[in-house]
Image 1 (tube, rainbow, N blue to C red):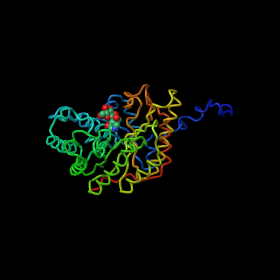
Image 2: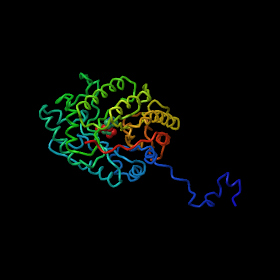
Image 3: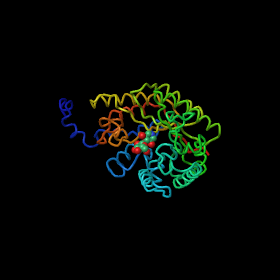
Image 4: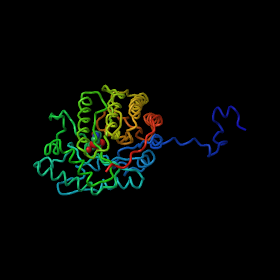
Length: 362
Ligand code: 9MR
């Protein structure tokens, strides 16, 4: 018999309860998301291939992965005449071994173009565009859950009429490069869901306010033209230092849903730069921001997944930008769950149920 005092202090409980009564393992983020019919995932790169503990965190916590840089043009095409698929193949191998679907990020992006591409005349850039899609999509057709076919089409600060992001693809083809990319990918890959991925739309800074209508207009035009678009990716690198109205953002998402599209949250993290230095206070503020955002956004049943941009703070892209080690993701530098992870679990648990999207429309 265990004394009341022992029960209250916990002494002897482990002995009496034995291993069968051990504390239940908390649900993973993927399991919590699954309850609502959502996928949960994170971008993944070399770090996970090199670090077994980090790889295990992906295996346990996620139900979908996104290539971080491995499928970007500049990584695949170090020189004009060479395709290097080794990195992307390794990430796909990890995804297959782990039984996780993989999102391919990103085929076409006007940013980060290699210098050799920028030097070429427009005609040659067009040829390389078509050839790149052909080679890359043929290699991975049928193996990816989705493609970010075009990333970040708009960047009004580039000064182009229509707010388009400038770069070699835009310079060579103008706005038509977007529809051309979607059609060419769809002609090769019959199952991968095709996404148009954009940044900034979640905030009410000038950037968010200007890009939101531009993206909505592009989506309308693509759908009216019969282009094979399945989903809108909204990156959601939240910037709590700027104004935001997440219920209004959810309403914006409903506009895409009304056109029959799903919406994926593709690069979620919470910039912590304006939050206190005190780690506990900062973690609480990050978690509260994440909770407010997810509770609003997940109320829309067309949202099919939430994907973080990396999984642990140790590998966040903010590491290079921040004045102090960032705490912007659900797991800390030692892969321990933070308050943001609990907030996400709670938001997934509270989300109305939905069905995972069917394979891509033909
Ligand atoms: O996190 C990515 C970083 O490692 C790369 O150097 C960079 C350029 O390829 O891209 C970062 O990822 C970006 C993503 O591709 C698009 N949205 C913003 C992401 C963070 O900058």
